[in-house]
Amino acid sequence: MTDRIELTGLRAHGRHGVYDFERADGQEFVVDAVLELDLGPAARSDLVADTVHYGELAEQLVAVVTGEPVNLIETLADRLLAVCLAEPLVAAATITVHKPEAPIPHAFADVAVTMRRTR
Image 1 (cartoon, helix red, strand yellow):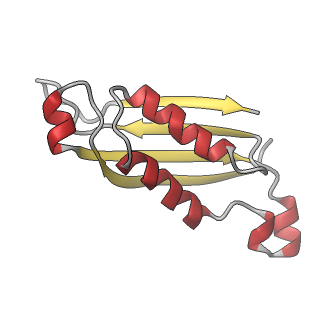
Image 2 (image 1 turned 90 degrees about the horizontal axis):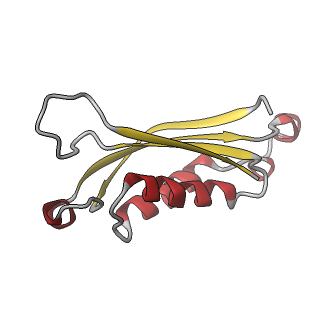
Image 3 (image 1 turned 60 degrees about the horizontal axis):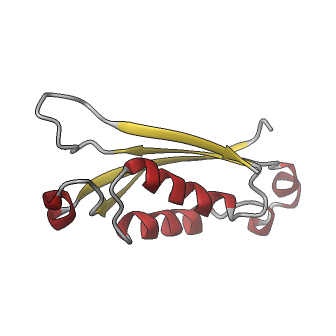
């Protein structure tokens, strides 16, 4: 599959983490989603019904990030992948969860987990 929809830099406040203070205070998470699907039908019809509505997808992904806390961003990424793959047109999806405020006692730019799943 060579066609893709990419949604990058989606930000939401979540309460995920191993430590109590992460659950209590929460922090910002950044999500990148790449959906692989055939965009030919949408290109020909010019109808949103023939593609994935990225605005609705963003709402669903934010609901997961702001929803029930998990310990690991690996678990969060897996839940986000499930949302992407629930879209019938999606053949494969890649999710990256960035945790730029991770509790690391050293200077760093980002911590991220990337997972890819296919049907």
